[in-house]
Image (cartoon, rainbow, N blue to C red; front, side):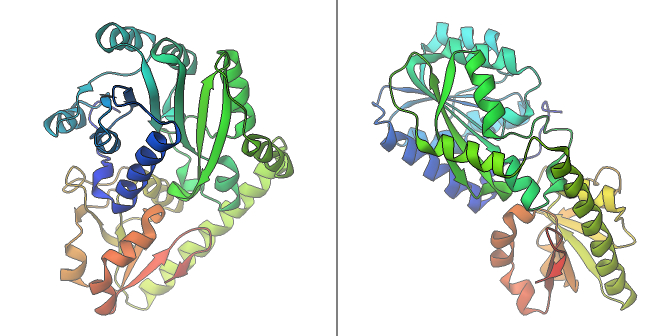
Length: 344
């Protein structure tokens, strides 16, 4: 799955701004010397590392997707085309030395062998180094009913309590956490080796208390979530079928993985959506898995002027709607599927 990957962050202004903030804040917060080594795991096309590079630190990407690793290399970001674990960590230490900062944005939840991954972090990270991960936050997923983010690529749905237990197993500890809005609600988790000095922020205890309040350890929480998911399905299908019965033309916007979960769960196919527009060239000319809806360049939406566009990549809804102001001026309207199916 990760050998030939089709998701590229540099096509999104939202992600570009997010990565710029992460790099700048990390350099400032930890006062990184210019000779520091920053390693990004799951580095994709090198977007995050480009911002680190402007601060004169040494950067290295580790990216398993061959097609995307080549893009990063071509743009000047040295990239190891491989998965991360103990073996890769030893190779980097031999070649480059240990890292002051290791980042992993939306990669940690994809990892099957977390033990091997964290043993690799222990090998690669300096004794006083910082490991930063960003993952979708389970309370946000439940509260906003983001069921379409539950799919094969995401193996874990994290909250602070189990993360703290996991890191403790490898003699590491969470010392700070930030809640961030990206991808429908995520957490940025700062981890250090337990032997390293420094206080633990009250943000950690605050979120542990929040998780207890949300009853994440109760099956009732998830049964309620399931009922809400079924309700969204029913209301979304009802809305789309009503619009089709009125003779309206509807397309999808964003051939996202989460979009495919929504389409397959709700059985939305070409009887409802004529096509799906997307700005990533790798996706264009293909079909969505399961429902087999054609994916076309996003320019098609202003040329064709369908009545409605169902936003499947809802985590970028604001950016999409701002970008497609011309489509809206031509009379087009957007539909948001979750948490409450509605026409915008």
